Length: 322
Image (cartoon, rainbow, N blue to C red):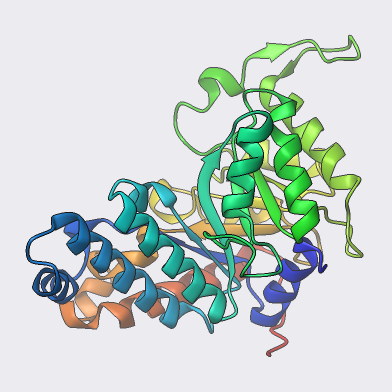
């Protein structure tokens, strides 16, 4: 079974970039031609209309970015809101991305205990075999704040299937510090540490115990670009942990803020942009350069700009090609 980090870094080396495209469909922002097509197919059912539109929109973004980036990250919540048809659309979007050779990280932030956690893991983590789960992701985001025992079932399934996990450690939202920064004594009785550092220590231990030839485990961490000091601190504290870095672009983070996520060889991180690429046609400079029907050209231009921007401040990787 091929290790998740090995597959991930092969994709990063192939494309020469750590850029990750989030898939966050929002019906009111989707191009009118997609909305109208979905309405014609499903006139009597609004949920089917939206699910169909989400699927087409995401598939077309995938077709644009697949030659450019190593991975995509569909946000499960937008699909779950639409009920069964939305969940079917999510499974099809994931399958399409994998058919294009992309690593798929499903952003579902699951977290539970015992058999319930294992059921979530078996439903979402396909790992190396895209037929192993109905929502056949390579990796899944996981919320650890019920305790370390919530991670163990996910780790078990990920190990079995060659899948990955991204544990929420220091998130990018403005209120992250409300709980994550609260200090408590370390288990060794030493100096008090913020809660996120306790989580980071557990994640590093799990990753180090399951590292591949490049020195990375399949248990990763979510660390936001909006807190660059903590990002540098956590990269040093978790040398075996692949990082998923949200907060780039629309949330205010730039290339300089994410630079600390990487080792000198350019490995160790993925940097996510969602709205800034999905809806590039709504933003300058792309809305001035492209007409509404050229939204896919805007997606490509925004993706290429992100790749170029990241190369200004992060260790360069020369693309190896297919």
